[in-house]
Amino acid sequence: MDIRSGDILIFAVDNMTKVWKISKVDSNVVKIFEEDGSYRQMPYSYLVEMRERGYIKIETPDMVW
Image (cartoon, rainbow, N blue to C red):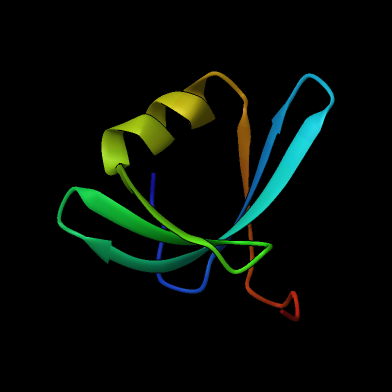
């Protein structure tokens, strides 16, 4: 999976949807801003697993924040 700074991730499980913007990919840690401006970090492997399960969709950064 190839993700870069500025990519938009749509995380959808059941009837919950969240939009995340990738701030930085730093080795095996991905730094993310959520819609409400909060910041989080997660291991790259977690994102890979969520994508394999169909929970995450990657979009181009043409979305305005």
